[in-house]
Amino acid sequence: MRNLKEILDRYPNLPRNVILKADLLRQGIRWEEKEQVGVRHYHHHDQKSQAGHDHGGHHFQGSMFFDDGTTFFISFNSQSPYGLRPAEEQGKFELLFSDGGDSEKIGEVSMSTVYPWTSMKTSDGTPMGTVFSPSLGGRCGPVAIFLLRYCEYTRFGEECRFCSWVQMGRSHEVRPNLTHLRETYEAIRQQQPEIGYLAMSGGSLINRTKEADAYIVYLEALRKLNLPLPPTCAAIQAMEEDNILRLRDAGFDYLAFNMEVWDKRAWPVVVPGKARHVGRDHWMELLVKAAKILGPGRVLNNIVAGVEVGSGLLTEEEGIRSTMEGFRWCLENGIYPKYAIWIKGGGALYSGKQSPSLDYFMELALQREEIMKQSGLPRPTIDCFKCATQSLEYDFENPRA
Image (cartoon, rainbow, N blue to C red; front, side, top):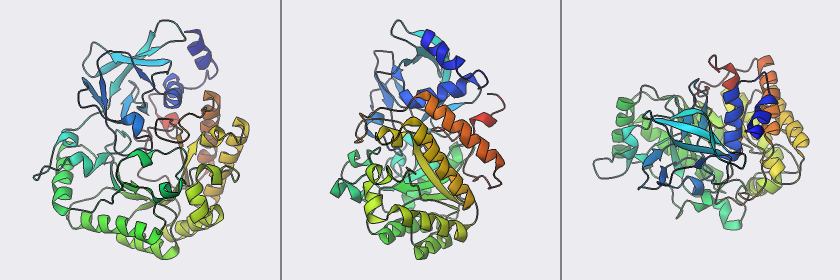
């Protein structure tokens, strides 16, 4: 346990569970029982390590949380120093740590609610979990639609290096079926106390107008249900002005034009498809244009923190400095800066790369926290500490942490 004590002692003024969350995201968690564990996610970059097992005695879906509410996304890694096994109390699990010897218990965590609709079917036998999906394990009940289950950049070997959507099977575009949407959405509304937001996402198309068409058609179909919708967000490639206006007029509350990496050197290496078909400078121009059209805080830019260091082009200090530069640029232009801790896993081209240290992620989180305190940019209504399962963006505000 010496290594764990050293980790926690480095941050004496920070909540213990927030530090553990960052390290669990960075290193994943291993399942200590012989019984197979079942995991199912439909909306995540790391598809292969999240593959489902129908015969799992325990079924995980998205996230787990500590008693103080600190919530982390589940990513399994058999080599992680952190372990997990069932506790005596139903729904609770023991969190273990091993520094090379026997595993010792360091706390307990609970599994986030798995709602029945995720295993139900529509009247014609379509799994509801393929119509909507729980979004990244958020405990405020966010749902997502993964409507382009194919990234065209894979045709040229230009997919984002941290992403394994290429592994998600035969390429196809999901088309809205009103019956499926109504039956599934009604089930969600009946079972969940809240729906934090509705996100739409998917792979990239070289023809970005066609990509925008898919999002607009889906939202128009949802509007035809005549049911209240939560705040909506399109996580989509950077669009030209005409398509930004179309997305706004269709009713999207937020647009996420995620650059994934800020550093100028790392951008074409980590996101080669975006670099060749859109370009970094133009992507930034479109972010600014979208923020002017939708308003301050309505356009998001997410960074996959740590992948720029994993590329081998930047040191950890350079990575923090570069990413913070990107956050400041966003704030200066009315764009809300977000990040996700890089979760490595099978399928992605960078799955074998080295993650930065825990110090990198803690320092980045603390520096971002400082500039966000000074910023007057409105926080998106689609964000809270219960749904930011892959970052520490709001954990410092948790009164129980």
